[in-house]
Amino acid sequence: MTQHIRYRSLSWWFKALTFQAYRIFGVRHFFKMLGLVQKYTPADILMQYVLQDAELCYHQLIKKYPEYTWTNKYVKRGLSYVIPEFSLLTCYNHFNLFAFWCDDAIISDCKKILKLGLPINTSIRLKSGERHTILLIGYDEERKLFYAHDPLGDYFSNYKIMYGANIEFPFYKILKISTGNPLRIQLSCNSYQSELVSEILHLRKLYSWP
Image 1: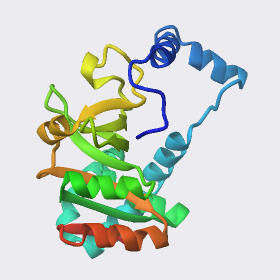
Image 2 (image 1 turned 30 degrees about the vertical axis):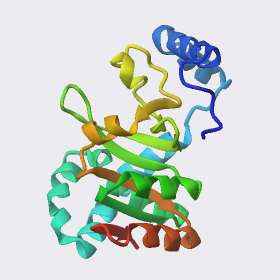
Image 3 (image 1 turned 120 degrees about the vertical axis):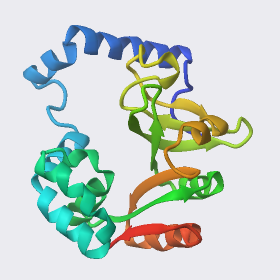
């Protein structure tokens, strides 16, 4: 079970409405100007690194995995941030975090990895057909669902609700909208955890860094 507030509980709705006000009325931007909230989140800082290191990440990646030469067009267009693997390589270069990604993970793989305390990025297809990444943070075996953070908001409100913390995704729904076969996942971890992740995913068509 996740330790975060329950999806669509009273506490969740309060945070959702507060966040909605931030987004609609620009309150958060005003607070940033006053220095009352972080100007740059860890995600913002990582994104800066990804853009800064795009060429380096590209050459590192194709040296080990030549099939990724297709990513060069995104580097040239300044769109390197759309390649999740670049973020994973950046995490290794700057924070020494080992990386794994594959397109054929299964539900039980994800549960084992989450038990290690490791969050998992998974790629889904939106109703518009576009690809989008959400972060799996836990699961409920009895209710057969994952808990996920979604940066766009609440998937099940068609993103009319902009608050995306602790969204409940049933296992069957994740399988239905995943871009993988059956699941595409990416994650970063320390060197000790990397050995455990390798054991869990050793039957998959696994990519890793370094």
